[in-house]
Length: 327
Image (tube, rainbow, N blue to C red; front, side, top):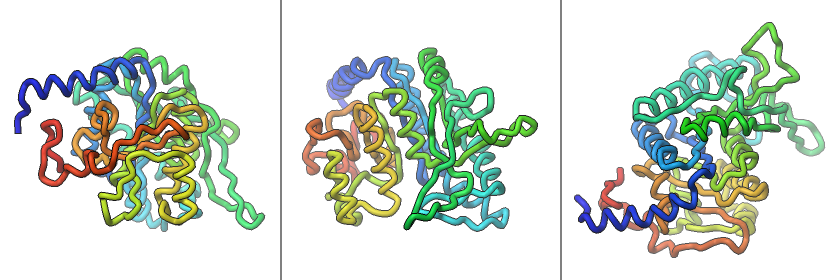
C-alpha cells in the first residue's frame, strides 16, 4: 500500500529529530543469530546501516557467525562443545572460527555494503585490528574452567574506528580479539581469541562511549511468555532485567545478551536495544520512530516505555508498517 504524501512527510519529520540527536554519535550494531545466514535480511540491515552513515551517524557493525561455524566444524569432523554457553575453542576450532568470521562472513558483509552503495571496511587483520584481548577465565566451585582460546576484550582501538567513521566508512568487526602476548611473529595467523559477539559489541560500545548498542537477533525482544508475542516488554530497567533472570523468565541464550546490555549501560552507553532483524528495516524502525519495535534496556529512571499494545509488533500480521510490508 502506497503511503499518502502527507504521511511520508510526517515519517520524515519524525525521523528528523533523531537524526539531529544522533549526528556524529556512535551506534554499535551487533548482527547475529540466524540473520548471518539469511542474505535477504542481512542485506536490508546493511541498507539501514548505510542510511545511518549517509545521514551523519557513526555506525559500527560487530558480528558473529555461530551457525556457519557449526556447519564448517561438523564438516571437518569437529564436535561442537559448549561450556557455560561458550564454544570450547581448541586450536583446530579456532582456525575454523577465524576463517569463517574473517574470510566468509566479514568479507560478504563488506562486499554487500559496497554493492548497496555504502563504504565499508573489515577490521580483522594484524594491520587493521580493532579488538585486543586476553584469555577468559571462568571458575566453577573453585575450579578454573578450561575454555581453550576463548577470550574477553581488554582494549578497543577507538582511534582506528573513529578515523573510518568520521570519513563515512563503516567499520565491520568480527568477534575476534588479538592476544598480543601469544602472537608468534613467524605465524601471522596466531594470537587470535574467540569472543562472544554480544560481549564484543558491548565492549566496543562501552569504549567508544556510544549513544546506543543495538543487538539485532532473530527474536522479537524480551518476552515474558516466549510463546506469546503480546508479552513483549517494550522497555526494561537494569533492575527489572536482573529480576527476570533471577526468576528464570530470562534464560538460556537470552542471558548473555541481557548481560551484555547491562555491562554497556554500566560503562556509560546511553541506551541498549534488542530487536528482531527479520522485520524489514528493523534498525531504522527502532532508532527513528517513537514506538520502536523491540525491547529497550535502560538505566533506572530513564525508561519512556510505550504500552505494549501500541507497539509495532501488535500490527505485524499482514499489515503495512510505514509502507514496508513485514515478512
